[in-house]
Image (cartoon, rainbow, N blue to C red):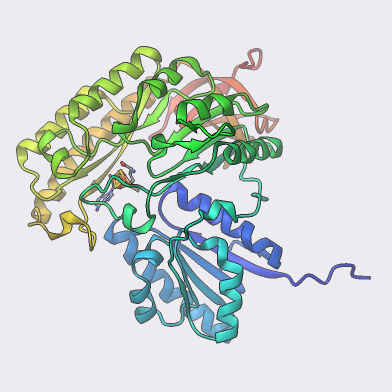
Length: 451
Ligand code: SAM
Ligand code: SF4
């Protein structure tokens, strides 16, 4: 006899953009699970497809519309039964454009409204029309989300802060994600405890401006990120902590000191600088100078000598001259990055820089190529320097080929070793034998297990 009459439905979620979207996608699945939605790997035959989108650059937005075109075919094949939802930052910024270019979309839901998905789905069924919810609710969505039910794996993302009040000249985030808000420390710690109990060993704290964190503690006082990291490190099972993305202006003394004293905090920091020219940093409204970035790097290397850095760069922001770009190249050569992301400036509607005279596309291309060649050289040198070293690796599961297992180094580099046992969730010392462009190959040092 069937003891449950719960309706089973198939949900497929497509995620574009940053790790915060990856986290949000997992939470959307949590919200829909009580309604019988189980996630599936393919959109074909799904009852509901969610496209969780990114609006940061024009290319990201165009990807959404071409993917929607493909989903339309599947929706027609299902006789109209498949529901299509567009969520994330394109939904927030371009709801009208979505409904005019893709009127077959059923739901358009902003990043602060997805906890309301069940009622929005019901409304779309009732009205048989498109439903839009792009409000920024007064109470944050975290107050309404169910406890995260799914296990994300050995490495888990945890959003602790959202939105941004910095209004960099080029960036859509303050408009799509809204004002900066931090989750209370107790709610973050409770979620981290659940993650650790399910088997997560590394927690990556996420926020658009994560080091501006100022969540309320149980005592009512605001906790900074350093204090939160100390409390997280006390949770049994939590072995490694990282946080991303940070702003140089919020890298305070306490947080720098935390890198020296908190052994769970990995010696690897993503600290976007965008440009090495003070003139451009002012034009970008970045609120820090190039030397401030240099000082932060030096102080972190002082408290944690094995510290390594990644960053983000924009080339061709309006007004960027050859001399400004040369200052960026000088900063890159001086700092030495383990890895970095670099982008051509992409004008975003509604942001201040979009209204300014633009740098020639060919100039942008040439600058990007030069910067990326130097960053690639630095990344290869960083990886090559690990060959011959023995380093702790957190194992996350099976590798791509039989007999191989995969994990992450202190610097989040993918590491592959041969092993008969999976060692998932364990940290073992590995000697690095070979460096590929994007991964390391090593051998297990069986006799030595990292503390
Ligand atoms: N909050 C982070 C910070 O302050 O650096 C970055 C957030 S943003 C999601 C990630 C990166 O995208 C930025 O660091 C920047 O390099 C890049 N980006 C943002 N807007 C851009 C634009 N209009 N054109 C090109 N790249 C952009
Ligand atoms: Fe965008 Fe980061 Fe600047 Fe905020 S601080 S506006 S998220 S680039």
